[in-house]
Length: 493
Image (cartoon, rainbow, N blue to C red; front, top):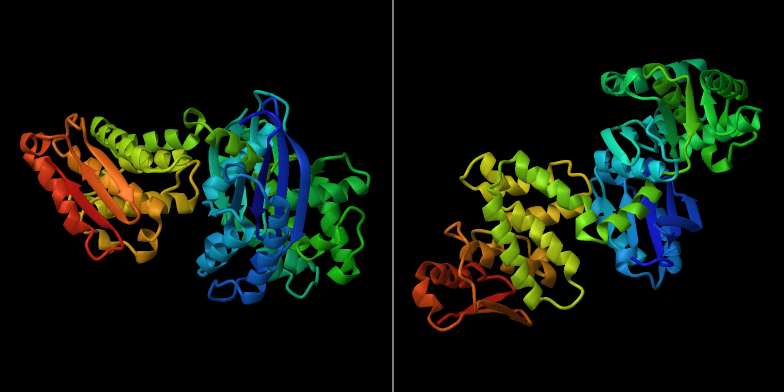
């Protein structure tokens, strides 16, 4: 990516949706525009954890307004990230499918640890260079992330299901501020966050930073009341809680520095901040400028090149953890990507990279059992926390791993309707067949071509006679793809 380009991040939070647009200048991203809308989608989850129609419509309407501003942006320059509310929502696919179409860019639902990693990147990028050990706290609408890190490297990351929207709805539902409500909310927050005491104890960090809306709102109120700008202290939190109880109800709340869109969730937010200060023995917290959306912007830069893409390192880590045969996996990956590049149109480099990752992980399930290992591998990828990956990306890799052997029709029709996915799978299956002997295969003259929904594999003269087992496995692919929208044809001689 060259200096001067515009990058954009969309943060679909539980309380607010945010759009950050920045310009790349000498490795730094300078803000060009920032839009925020209070959507309160986190308050739209019903008892069955489905988003209500009203909550989804509020989100879609906001995304439509963001889409107008993002018109003309290349796909590689935009990242849309969804967090806890959409992690929880049972009907999230309905919202994401339509929302992605409205926005014009795919929406990635990220895991809690991945959200924490992006938050830390956003905070660290906007702080001065330092060797200090940092604790970063981000209190969102339905989750709270805690991260320990140094410089640009996050170490310990965790996500807890406690947030300002959820806690305000549970303990301050009628808008009343009472001592009993604050005590109940704080005790409940401590119960959820209690396990953080060991990992994030006071001896593990030098400076505490708070990011995002809740901490920013508390900091603004305390600064307006004469406190130190950008700093939250224990005595300030005591004073603020007292002011809320004096007001007795959100409708009577008048505090300088408190924006109207924060009033409804300030009770839950203050309770969680106080709980964290007590549990982690924090005396002073600095309000950070960076947040999730800045982390997503810098992640776009890292993803631009294979050598800086964190996902490549994560795949290597998973291969090591599950004792994958590296030499064999890399042979399959190299061949699958070669076949894919030959058959795919220009601009498919990112799809080729994802195919390579799936190929490297296609035997990941063997650590559990060799029987049906492709099912185990798909399960692992659907249920692992993998730094750099969004949940849909891991599911995509899992589908390729699931489909690399056996009948193809076990995959859903919607997956096979995607021509990129179908070509990735054809190339992966062909590469696995050609590498069956677990040694470097002779693939000179082997080519894969796609015309419409017909895939053809061709060989040089005499190859099939020299390698009859490989030829047999490729010919079996014709049967595997029956009863799918695709046809697999072999022209081997």
